Length: 185
Length: 137
Image 1 (cartoon, rainbow over the protein chains, first blue to last red):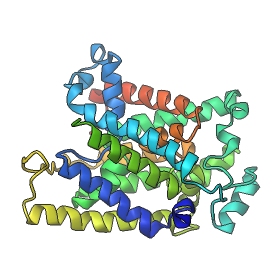
Image 2 (cartoon, rainbow over the protein chains, first blue to last red):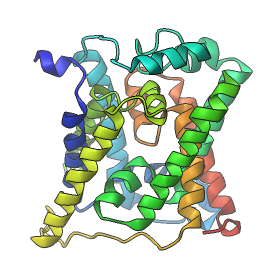
Image 3 (tube, rainbow over the protein chains, first blue to last red):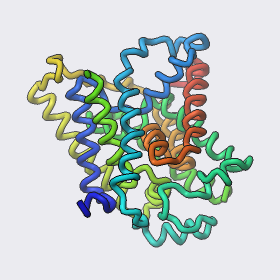
Image 4 (cartoon, rainbow over the protein chains, first blue to last red):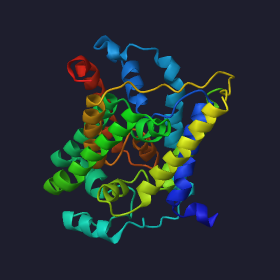
């Protein structure tokens, strides 16, 4: 039980994520979380504005159930399966974050410097969340998948387009982390 | 009842992502700084095993739980949409620290400001739908 409450190492998590993909394939579906954003747009009536959203969203209900499960899983993991230990981030990361003004890195899953309401309710804080979310939603649909659909499912099926997309993920991530975040913070 | 198995897969997925810290903004930052093997280990082992799983499913012509043939749909051939879309996604991933799975998981962990990110991601997807015909694919 103790090892469940502690953070899980990568060699446990990786195979378990592959298992999620395997289960969804065995259930006749595919592992891709970003499709839910399109489904939710369709449910919200986006089909009136673009044919892209005119599809049978009911065939995607199973994926929304996965989303509901993911929320519950997040709740269970933090409420019942965590010992509250600080993340074992690399000391270089902690030092780099400290230089940017991020303190106590790793004590919570997300930095309060970005996600606490105190910071969210400023123009800068709100802009970060809105721009970040917008780029994720726009980019993932443009690229036709995200970390699950391309990096896990696509690469597992040896899809060259997914490799190109993952290279793109890294180009964007590296630009943001190395050049833009230091300008913002 | 047929949806119950998907609920359990989702719960399992959410627990794994929290316990492995893959939902953490800090871990994404650390990954893009190449300062830890953690995220590379997770993605690397997932893909390594995933390749074996998919090959085995194809090799042994495994049928789905409902007895149908499994579909492995190849992605459309293109470079621009994957490179451009991927780069835009990467910028957002490293800024918000959450991609389209973790953003829901994080709501479950009690971070309700994540609803703003989800709403913005829906807007981003909607705007893509409006502009799709004008973008290079």
